[in-house]
Length: 202
Image 1 (cartoon, one colour):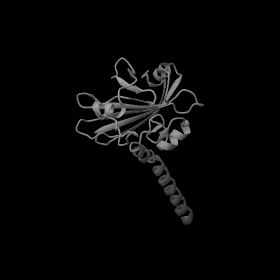
Image 2 (tube, one colour; image 1 turned 60 degrees about the vertical axis):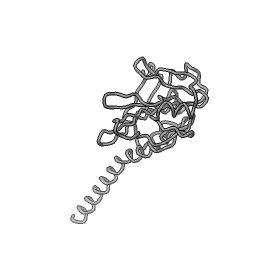
Image 3 (cartoon, rainbow, N blue to C red; image 1 turned 135 degrees about the vertical axis):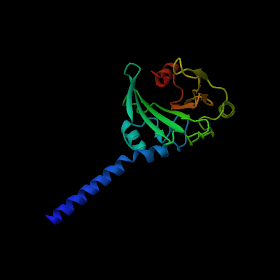
Image 4 (tube, rainbow, N blue to C red; image 1 turned 120 degrees about the horizontal axis):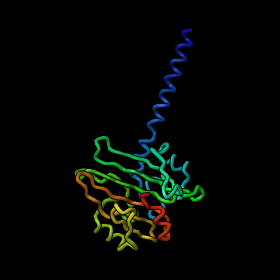
């Protein structure tokens, strides 16, 4: 009985250790995600356009915080969130699907920070732009946008570079105690209708 009890305790301890390590795997993966480069029209946060839902879950270390249905249920967003424990910054990663066959069609980063905190998404685009940098930097690196769009009636204007496959808020919106910016990677040469379907907030 004594040997059996020792074996049982050891087995429970091993399973508990495995459970704890598995539960914590998402955080390091998300931490790595904010350091990944942004490739226009291809990838961001370690996720590539065309990735399956399973591939996204594997890349980000676990299931999303939530899944949201938008545009009358024709669009599904997998939503992940990463935050600094002190509350200095937060990053929401939204990966958009409309059909399983297409895989991920948009990768959106919503980045907020206290004015005193450094920009938390550390990856840059292939041209050297870091989300949140001023309008002047965006214009110097990319020129004038092909179009300026609104994700909703309440959102700030986003710049769309159709050939590059990116949509972003140049600079940041400044609130009472939070600054916010957005960056979206999607396929190049989308039609305006397809763009609206992928970036609309509802």
